[in-house]
Image (cartoon, rainbow, N blue to C red; front, top):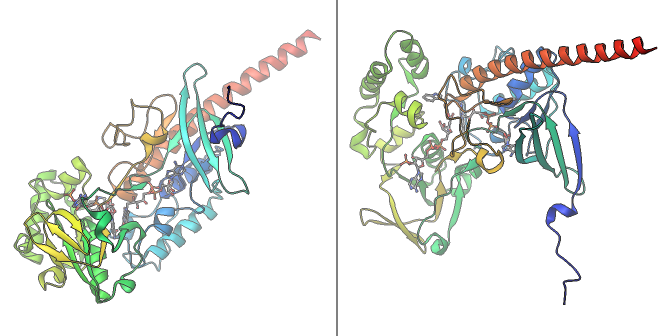
Amino acid sequence: MPNMFPTLASEDFLSSRCIWVNGPVIVGAGPSGLAVGAGLKNQGVPFIILERANCIASLWQNRTYDRLKLHLPKQFCQLPNFPFPEDFPEYPTKYQFISYLESYAKHFDINPHFNETVQSANYDETFGLWRVKTIATGGPNPIGVEYICRWLVVATGENAEKVVPEFEGLQDFGGHVTHACDYKSGQSYSGERVLVVGCGNSGMEVSLDLCNHNANPSMVVRSSVHVLPREVLGKSTFELAVSMMKWLPLWLVDKILLILAHLILGNTEKYGLKKPCVGPLELKNTAGKTPVLDIGAFQKIRSGEIKIVPGIKKFSRGRVELVNGETLEIESVILATGYRSNVPSWLKENEFFSSEGVPKNPFPNGWKGKGGLYAVGFTRRGLSGASLDAISVAHDIAKSWKEETKQKKKSMAARHRRCISHF
Ligand SMILES: Cc1cc2nc3c(=O)[nH]c(=O)nc-3n(C[C@H](O)[C@H](O)[C@H](O)COP(=O)(O)OP(=O)(O)OC[C@H]3O[C@@H](n4cnc5c(N)ncnc54)[C@H](O)[C@@H]3O)c2cc1C
Ligand SMILES: NC(=O)C1=CN([C@@H]2O[C@H](COP(=O)(O)OP(=O)(O)OC[C@H]3O[C@@H](n4cnc5c(N)ncnc54)[C@H](OP(=O)(O)O)[C@@H]3O)[C@@H](O)[C@H]2O)C=CC1
Ligand SMILES: O=C(O)C(=O)Cc1c[nH]c2ccccc12
């Protein structure tokens, strides 16, 4: 018997709309998307920003811990054309940074479409247009929307999704397992033995915060890590590196950074923090691995308050077995295992973006693709890299928007004249 009630795809239940955008569609209302928006506003170009969360800068507002501060000095973190307030400290807190971003959006009158997740973006070769499909969940029912535009700006970030590795036996562990993006404070871990998996800036700072709340962290270092002091003789290490880069080759700057780190912190390898073979800046540029800028975790490692342990073999009820055969009894696990881009899941394009979801061309040539495609904030250079991209992208789009608008006006005027001459 034929099926009288064929099942409908979930999309069929959505009412849908199609919208022509006179200008670019920007995906993501983080610092990168806001900075492009500001540049476009300054040049009179209309645009829309689509944001899956219900606020701007959702990484900063929803997916970071309470005690987070910017770890680069403020002059490297402000966005174009709107400086930080003068009374901001050298390393603003995340709350100060968020309030700055709110003022930034207000100043440039940027109003993203919140609760609207981009599901796919395809380039229509025939018409030379982008078709961007979203699901908007702000109203009583989800709505499917399709935007048609000439320019598409990808500003979804290098940290769009958490990385959650699979571990044997984790389902039997029975304790609390959280990713660093959901960790707010060590308060609820007081007195607990906690396994922190990963030793990047997140792993280090979460471990430090746990110590400050009387918990006992063990931090997994499965391979290697560069630990640099955040400051050298009161001057930011990052700033020092940027100044040296003007005169010296990268390898030499890396050597000097490692010598300074050794003078200030001593031999970090003695405590189980094996150093990578490649220098800290070279590693950041080639593999995107950020060196740790230490704000006090290393002192806790030296004192034994943070225990360093090797890679994980498997979990079992209330325990973890390590690759060296040692077993630890633990109450909780925090996965400080990093983040990844989500571009491959929605952008139907594989010439400009790699399979990891970052532009294939290295900095400074990774911001412009073909057919009006742009990327902002994928340079592995934090907020200062995002600002540089945003300036280039806004300038380039404004130029071609103005040319096309002028041409359209010309051809409309010509059509108008032809119409008049008929009378
Ligand atoms: C804990 C932490 C601390 C950091 N500290 C510093 C620092 O001190 N200095 C520095 O320079 N950098 C720092 N960074 C790097 C960080 O990536 C940048 O600061 C900055 O947030 C990058 O901005 P962005 O706009 O490119 O990406 P994001 O801030 O991640 O913004 C991207 C936005 O896109 C939205 N989005 C994603 N997918 C979709 C979709 N499909 N549809 C619609 N919207 C979508 C997201 O919800 C998000 O709001 C830090 C990162 C982390 C994780
Ligand atoms: N104050 C600040 O400004 C802060 C900035 N940040 C930034 O946020 C970004 C993300 O940092 P972070 O979250 O630390 O992520 P990272 O990608 O820098 O580090 C991930 C860590 O997890 C480890 N890891 C991944 N998978 C496994 C596994 N299966 N077993 C054991 N270890 C594993 C990695 O080890 P391996 O190297 O062996 O792969 C690495 O040590 C960085 O750019 C960082 O600088 C983060 C926190 C604070
Ligand atoms: O914190 C981050 O994620 C950054 O990307 C900031 C950053 C850019 N370049 C760097 C080099 C060394 C340490 C941090 C950074």
